[in-house]
View 1 (cartoon, one colour):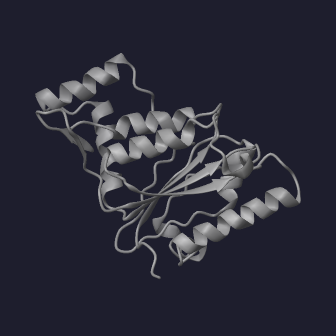
View 2 (cartoon, rainbow, N blue to C red; view 1 turned 135 degrees about the vertical axis):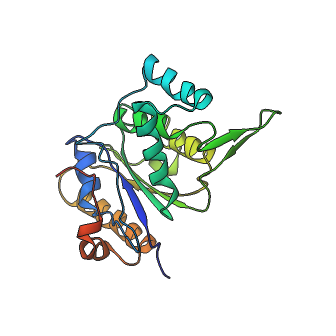
Length: 220
């Protein structure tokens, strides 16, 4: 089957075993017709929302002014509307997502831009018609016998917040035991890479053929 024509890849900073393992998967960035501009959370982390930033974002909605924080949020949101696929590399940090990824999410979840609320209090996500691939990585082993992982608040949070803004076509690719050296880690990487290749049939070679159009975000 044909894969997506445009993909935006979101990685996180750091050199943990899980982050580096995600980088080894060579997540493809595909571009047909326009460059893929990917948020570089490692070199240029998105600032966390403080009180002045929150006031800027909400003030812009009522006044029509464009403050620096609003301009950044607007650009990050605009970058989400044109690709037909979004890939998020998310290593497990202390049972949750990494802080830079949380800051990024706080900038893109905005009333009137990525979701709306009607007078009855019903929410509607606006980022529709896109697929999302979540690369979930952790240093420890997989839960036994497929049982729910009580220490994993990362996956349900990402699933919930992405669906809230309209991204309902979500495929998780789980990468376990990244802290385990040797054959087990290599086997898990191979399995995850096969899942990525099935989702993106063009494969990493497409990203390599479009080097001039693609900005990657994973650690070097």
